[in-house]
Length: 212
Image (cartoon, rainbow, N blue to C red; front, side):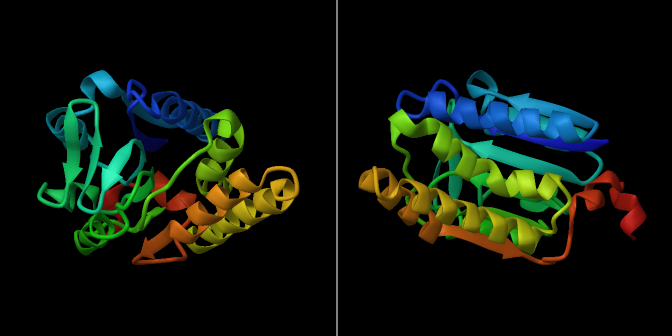
C-alpha cells in the first residue's frame, strides 16, 4: 500500500477550482493504479499544525502532493503558510514531493533534499493557467505524477512531463497563441531536484526500516 498526503487549497479565491481539479485527478490516478492510504488535507485544515500531525502519523515512505500557492521558501494556503524551510523537514525523508505551486523550487526544494527527501518536482518561478482551458493545464500539471505511478523512474517521469507540455503546445499553438505561450512559460519553470533519479513507484511500497 502506498501512502499519499494530498494537500490542496480548493477555497482559494483565485485558483481554488483549479487546485481542486488537479487534486481530484491526482487522487483518481493513484486510486486506479495502486492500493493506497490517501490522506486529504483541504483548505479548512490546510495549516502547519495539522500537517505536522499527519506527518507524525506516517511511518513509511510516502508521496506528497501539493496544489496551492507558493513562494521560494514555503507553501501557502488555507490558513496561511503550511510548510516552510523553517519547519522540521526531516519528516519528508524518503518522500517523493510533487507540487503545482509558484517559486518553491528555488529554496524549499533544496532544503527538502538536504533533509533526505528523495525528489522534488515543481517550479522555480511563477506558474500560470488560462482558466477557460483548465483541463489542458491540469493534464500538464499531473502528467509527471501519472508517469511515475505507471512505473517510470523519477527522471523519466520528469522528462515525460516536459514532453507532454511540448506536445500540448504544438497542438494548440496555431489556434490559441496565448495558451501556448503560458504552457511554454510553465515548461521553462518546471524543475526536478533528486538525490536518486532511478527511484520508481515500487520504492514507496517498502517501509523505511527495510532500507537500512
